[in-house]
Image (cartoon, rainbow, N blue to C red):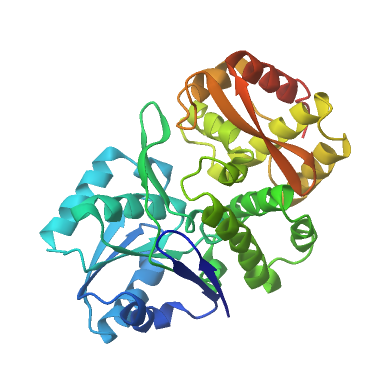
Length: 355
């Protein structure tokens, strides 16, 4: 078991280990207090783990209620967000009570935003059940829902009070979701720790704890330095600005991890075409992604993606901040205007070919 401290404005811990779910009640009592506990999960995860979590919380003296979201990205809607707030109110949660987000990134986003909004803040525990959520979205306090215009356009920075990353729950994760999570691990390798690529090249399961710990350690450092995403934390967006546009263009039918994989390739190809990195950088990236079963080519054109990117929440007027690799393990932030962004898209897409 490993514990990583996040030095945000409200410090908290990420506890990583197997079998943590059965200890969730005692850890909640020890760290968070409160009397009522609302478990928020989805239709895939709730039947597997919500009962066990409810039992652990009940044994620790909590009055437990459960809310189940639909599975999938479309659950991040305004309608589900409001329905969840009404559920909190109907169960008479107070500001000293708990919300437990049991699921992947979608559950964490919706439950986290609702916890941030109801009575201006409930205590929040993230319990990631996907690799993607464990290495990335459960940490750092970004919570959001989607609007019709685009992804994550309504949300709040709201750090969890505790993260329990029980990687034994990954044993029931369908392979496609495990592969999606690997895209985020590749991102951390590209921005900070090349050795992660070596761990992905061998049998993954024995290294769950090490992979999760290395990724969240990188993220915790960036969050501590730039909690509200105005500077160095934006390195975590490598592949995401392009990837979010791909998700939007697809009507959210392209999973997040696959979209990020394509986004990283676009950024890396464009950087190589501009001479910012060597050709070996996108080559190694694409070799890794293909080896994991992730896509490298995008079906959408530069104009279509650019229109989607105009709605990106990170746009500042006519300025976009994109993340470009200089080598494996080191990326830079570059501010570009709309015309320059279109050129990067063109350069990153013109090498699309067979996979």
